[in-house]
Image 1 (cartoon, rainbow, N blue to C red):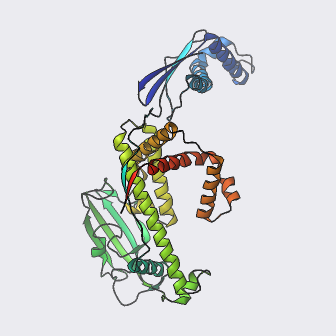
Image 2: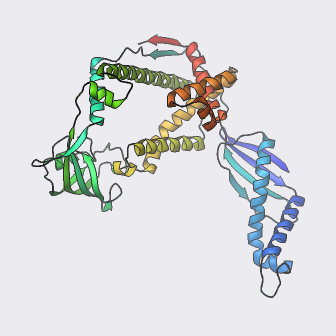
Image 3: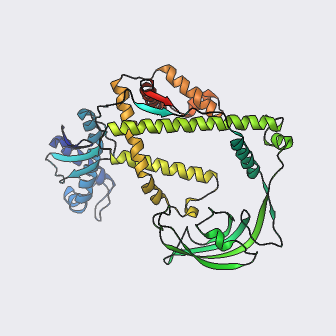
Amino acid sequence: MKVDVAHVSEIEKRLTVVVPQETVASQFEQAYKELKKNVRLKGFRPGKAPMSLLEKYFKAQVDEDVIQKIVQETYPKAIDEAKTVPVSQPKIENAGIECGKEFSFTAVFEVKPEIVPQGYEGLALERENIAQAGDEELATALEGLRSTYATLKDIDGRPLAKGDFGIFDLDAVCEGKPYGGGPQKDFFLEASDTSYLPGFLAQVEGMQAGDERSFALQLPEDFANKEYAGKQVDVKVVLKGLKERVLPALDDEFARDLSQKYSSLDDLKKALSDDISTRKRNQAEHGFRDRLFDALIERNAFDVPKALVDMQARNMVMETQQMLSQQGIKLESLGQSAGTLLERYRGAAERQVKAVLILEAIAAKEGLAVEEADFEKKYDELAAQYGQDVAAIKAALDREVLRPQIIENKAIDFITAKAQITEK
């Protein structure tokens, strides 16, 4: 087998593989042997059909099968011999096959760019200095908890008002086509400024149970779902029922009902304050990393493999769908689709892939390696984060999955240690 590698671009390679005629002949012999054993031709007992008839009726199929088998067996070996690592599925090209002759094929695939990282030492970066949660933040969190544990009771004798919940039969159409997955029955929706579509609240406010209304909503040009931006959606609704939220009293009993670890409202307040401060610190750290990534990307220009961007964008869509699913929300009910989200996330996905590739290159250049202690520390962090035993985390998560993340964090720590940081 002969292997030749051509560099099409910084991120694309063309691999040409030439398979000797002996291998081709052997594969054809084996393919026809299997075919002869299994095929049934009229007038011949199984295994007795002549080769001339087998070639007449099955040549195209056998040629295709032999090509597929040769490619499957030789491509991985050729990749190893060429000492290259594809990051995309190969596009296979060949000019056909003939028994007794050499067979050649080419595989075009993407690879990671070879990055010589620059400008990562002495970066001037801002970092937020986070204080404890303020009274207003704590009050907002407490109201959020009350809202979460509120009960709903039926409304009689008054119309739908902002903040109420309506049970709707809803049918929306945009340019003659169903909007948001088609008609919805018993659609439970809060009457708020952000419910369903812009302008929806103003149209349904004041409805009584049993009322029907038809109206048109003009979507803004900057509407999140670009497919519908600037278009008109015609809506028909029937209000089948109304409910209002009843908030629980904010007292010691409420705190104890939330968890046994709270003996009083003061305990709950302290826990919330700590959670808010932790969240703010995490947000500040994310902001710091974003600024660090922006600085690295600005100083290191290179092309990014489309396959890696597509993979990252798909992962982001999946995370969004899982997050919504946990809240009982379908993507379609928000006027979105996986396809539109994929396009929206592509820019952010490319930025994230660039940052990861630069950090990998920095780690390689500086000789940053993952030690056994690093794995143990990461497992301990994950166990604490998810409230599980370390052994359970180790059983569920292979350490090699953690290696890239540990390397990235080591590279970030290295850059941070050498940066000029201004506390804000």
